[in-house]
Length: 121
Image 1 (cartoon, rainbow, N blue to C red):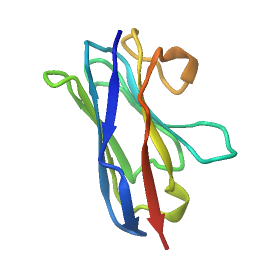
Image 2: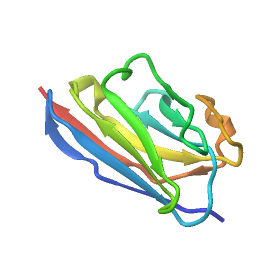
Image 3: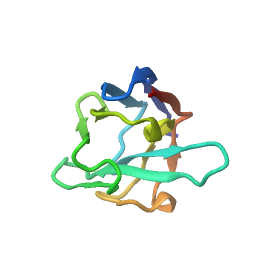
Image 4: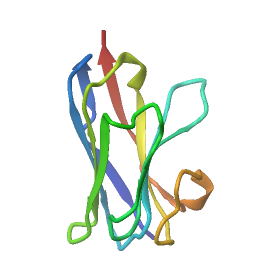
């Protein structure tokens, strides 16, 4: 059983930056970040393939967020720049058994508890 633990969330002013980390207890392949606001559906943010050679971003974050991974540490990162108040959400990382799983949440079998990101205006 793989466990995922996120860190790096917090409160930041609009225009600022945060870096989220997600450490896995075991070997994982496809990795991704999703976010959710209370009362709304979970939203895809970014995904990365096993070797890091393929990435995908939601249009709302493209050009501002960067997903990366360090397989030696079983850790995936989400660098978030130029943050906006609408980026406020609980961010959760996900892991799957395929080389690449894209934006479909059902393709990921493991989920972290989430970390709160709050962007003030």
